[in-house]
Length: 178
Image 1 (cartoon, helix red, strand yellow):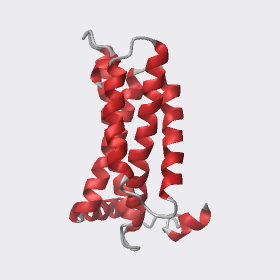
Image 2 (cartoon, rainbow, N blue to C red):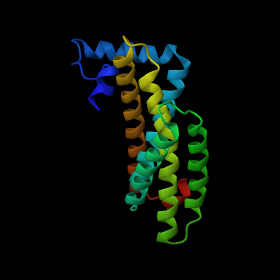
Image 3 (cartoon, rainbow, N blue to C red):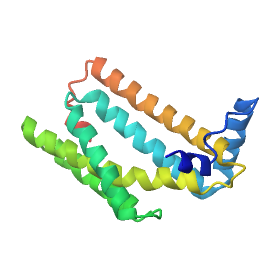
């Protein structure tokens, strides 16, 4: 709740010159290889999620699976950041992408999307938690802002690609992309 946001310095108003702070955050992301790769992992997650969400007419199983995956990851992590869930989630995202490609009806597609969502939650939650925990206290807000900006660019790119693919004359099925 508020105690967690206060601990991470997220309740105080942004200082004047916030765009310079975002620039400092991008520099902070770039200089720390762990934060850089974590931000790229989060961006990858949002890119794929926006792409899949934009191309499917079955978003509900995906969203419900993602919610379940985040809850499972939270339960398995306890009070620490469990980065070991990230490769497990990445493996599941790949596996259930292949399963989605082999679906033959709506029920199997919904099941594959749900399992993809669960795997996505296992992948993303530890990365988001690490982005909140790792930066020094004085760099936390700019680094988190920069990571959110980079992730938003990834999500916009995924949504843009989904829109382009949907509008193109390419005879492509959603499941073939994954």
